[in-house]
Amino acid sequence: MDQITETISPLKPRQRQGFTSQPIEARKSAFEVIQKIGRKDLAEVFVARFPDGRLCEFVDAVDPRYKKDEKWIINLSTQFGCPVGCPYCDAGGGYKGEIKCHDMLDMAGWVINRNPPDLAQSCKKLKIHFSRMGEPALNNEVLKAIPALRRHLSNTNVWMCVASVAPKGRDHWFEDLLVIKEEFFAERFQLQFSINSTQAETRRRLVPIPHLSLQEIAEYGERFHFKKDRKVALNFALAKGNEFDEKILIKTFNPDCFCIKLTPVNPTVTGKKNGVETVLRSYKDKKLEDSLEHLRHNGFDVILSIGDAGEDEIGSNCGQAVRFLSEKIS
Image 1 (spheres, rainbow, N blue to C red):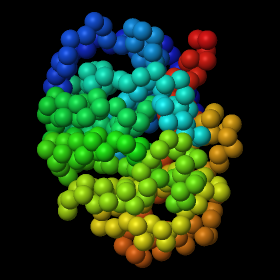
Image 2: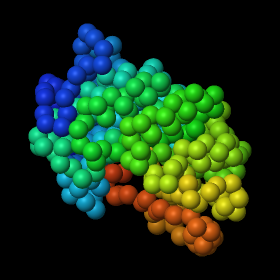
Image 3: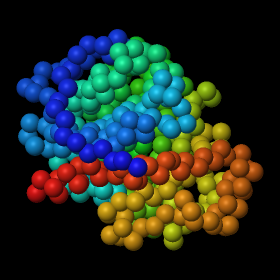
Image 4: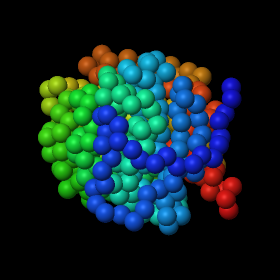
């Protein structure tokens, strides 16, 4: 399997059908794309360098099960680095501030402009996913970017996706997100909370900043979800030794509003250093399988999102491209 790693010159923004790149506010200069890693049939990760030297990633991706005009995914970073510091994520460390709304829009526009002119307009499902480098709920600019993207993208099949560790003290952010979702993306919004363990002490270790309890997430999610909305996803990147107690989930969460999503812990430099090993992929756990069946029996949708092993082979997991390039430069 070939890996593509190359330095490419920046693509000048231009107007295409379905996306009109307009700055949200005046700015002196835009970013420069200095590296691409990946495969067109899976994911291409771009490293953007800003005038002050800060780096971030954004991604042009597909779901291998579908053609690109059926499902297209654009992943955007929300921060330079990440202040959370999860022990399995290469995006943590080296936090250097927030990414502005207009820069997130320009990254989305850059990806759209490099593809066929009508794709953004004709794609049956275009997902803009705020889940790369950074914690979206710690950046108020994300709340500007979501409605701004709706104004710029005329395709009615555009979805917004936000993945968060549910940081504490950001009540106003989550309340504003609820209002924005209803106004601009009702029934086309995917909210995901990274839970990773049902045990509070383990969650504190895996998400080493103050974060909402399971009960607080449950209360918010029930207000966030309306009848035809996508269910709020409780994501468990399950690692060996981390607790997954379905009885706690059944007791705490409403299956009409929440679904359970299991993903592997992607192989990263940080995860290897901290001894974090996934329980998904080839590892079989009868107890886990019984737990999932118990959840289904109690009305929960259970999603096993294993992904394509090629993503690991090309090093396209969050923060890896910036980390490897930064180490090379230094």
